[in-house]
Structures are given as structure tokens and as C-alpha cells.
Image (cartoon, rainbow, N blue to C red):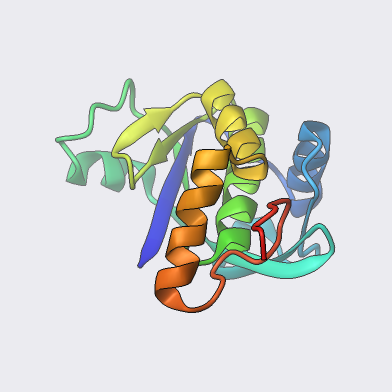
Length: 166
């Protein structure tokens, strides 16, 4: 199952280098592919999380169309830009990379995140907390991850800052 989040903003960054600088300011161990032009983002965006290859889907959406086509979502105003992120729900590194990149992007553009899985808006500070919790899961979250590993017969969450007891 794929997961998605959307960053709504009234300004965009100018380049991947500017986005990377925002990620670095947040202190996230994420390196985006530098050879892609931001304005042409449409598809898989390779990145490295703690030196390991990962990535996520990333593409520009038409903010006006998105707002118009979702009258059930209460947008606080007519945002100008929309950057969408998608990843496989079973891929922990993709999840972390997308949330780190999306959080940094939202901070850099004074935007807000719409978490499609939770069907709610997330402030920039709440997004920082989500990233922190992803990097430092509670014992209960670790136990739940262990149950999923047992049911699947493999580890869908490679060891990315998580002690999984294996």
C-alpha cells in the first residue's frame, strides 16, 4: 500500500540545493539527488538516508485543482503550490526520507503538510515531532513492528535507527 502526504505553500524553493540546505538546517541525515532540477520533479526521487540508498515519489500538483476537487478538505486559504510525496507503506526508509524531506520543505516554504493517511493537516512543528518519533520509536512501537515482522516473515523496516531485537 502506498502512502502520501502533500505540502501546500505560497512559495517554492528555487533548487534542489536550496531544499538540501533546508534538510541540513533541520539536522536530518538525508541527502537528496542533486542532479535533478526541482521544477521537473515527477517520479522517484533517489536519496540517501544515513548513507543508504532509498527515495520516494515526488511531484508537483496543481494546487488550485487539488483544492477545487476536494471540497471536503478544509484548506485555510487558496494555496499557490503543492508538492506531493508518496512511498510504499512497508518501506521504513522511504517513510522516513519522505517525512524528513517534506518537513524541511514545509519549513523552507512556510507551508503546511496534509497527511493523507490521517486525513488531517500537520503543522511544521508537529511534522518535526513525527520525524523525531520515526527516528526514536517507543518500546510499544518497536513491539508492534516486531509483530509485523513476524507476520510477514521478513523485516520491512531495515535497521534505520531502530533496535529491532533481531
